[in-house]
Length: 235
Image (cartoon, rainbow, N blue to C red; front, side, top):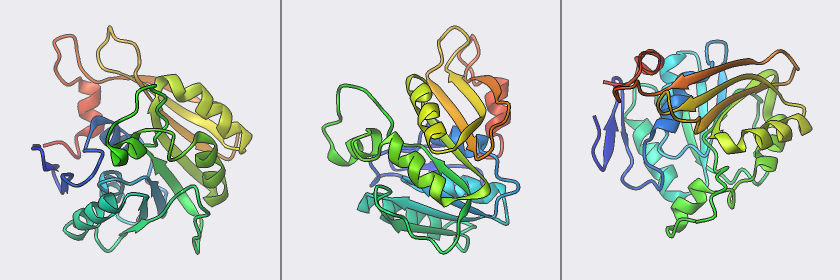
């Protein structure tokens, strides 16, 4: 259930009235798709409302999450959302620019991001929304370099990016010794081309698991596979 100010899931509510990027399908997809079972520490880069951090914490009761964002309003909103959630003791939100060195006492088993790897020629007139959506605030190169330095040996990096950017992201990952282990292309309907791609990287080269996720069936209803992926969250 949603309105212009908030979005209610089964176990938590996310307010997004002060955040540049609202709750959307991309975040829900990544939060549902990312493997979390064996992770104990996670970093959410560009956490926005805190949605993905909340989803990961719900899915793994032993997971501690740090969410970072460059935007003051996003940080405040995420902190508010976390404070009223069942997992407030396991999620910490901080203001930080990932272009700068991120100092941490420990490495992370998991890094996730719905990053601003957009390449549209038209930028958003609202500065905070532009920072959230475009590569002017965080480049693919920086994302991969920083992630490579912050992951544990068995750690994973999970991203959702525009389909058109996937090849560049994969190439930059290899340059930083991160290798694609899983890829899911996302299309809206069976007749539409893929629009988004979810990518999982690790430190070891291995065969990549490929699949396709279709969000809606021919009648425009939520597909069975999308329902199955998100059943723990959507009302």
